Length: 363
Picture 1 (tube, one colour):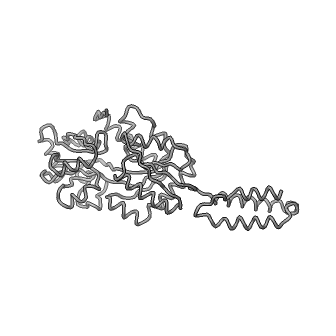
Picture 2: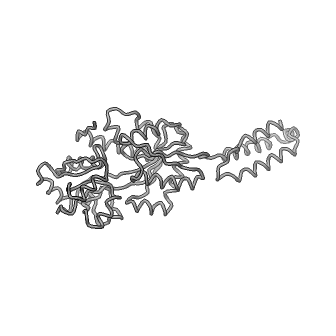
Picture 3: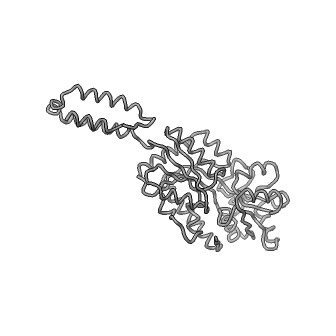
């Protein structure tokens, strides 16, 4: 019996995490205790007390190995350097510090996020491969592509929102419009509609423009670019009069007077550009933001999902994280797994309707 008990003790706490190293001393002390007593006599005199000690040790051993006990992979389904990638690396850095385990950001771009998201969805369901997702690969592509290698609504366990970033409707300095009303008038007076740039077909930028065209009587004409960089260059150069883009790359150009903000698409004004009104302030009842969030493969144990969620909330409360996200024009936003799941379903319904109503197709 003495040998069996010792084996039970040794079987727990073999690889303690950084946060649980203090359990080692406890285990050693209990080992010494059992080596010095007569187990048979202990069982006779007090079986209950004996097994309470054993069960307590087992519990301590389990707690000595909390998630994570090895490096975590955080997949980003788009190239390095963009807002999603920058936010993912910031989160990875802070989680690494908090967990005492490396969180490695891995870029797997291609096919509007489908390639990376597919890898994440089909990874082991153990919490050691996560996806830093955006609307494209988790809410939009399902309505946009006729064939998908995964279903974002069923193949992921949403963990938490991380941040939201507004889109901006902007014009170059050669355009006279200063409000949505003036922009709408200009668009109606432009033969063929007012060209607006987006980062590509099926992008959130295009979907916002299409919604405004069909629901707010803004006669836009969509001009897709291969990314934000080329679109911004043409906007600055005067080759295209207007654009719908994420806030971060626009901030320095707005401050320099090279482009002018007409509206932000969030519910509230953004502190980075406080003088630019929202769509709702200008009588257009619509809201759309680029959001980023963490996903685990569907089937990941709920206790691990809840642990990651709790730790993300802790990290997002860090003032340095809030400051760095604000520099990019966004705000940290957390949620419960259930709240995030409901939010994604709402986003999917909103954007799938726009795609259907606008008859948007991809090759």
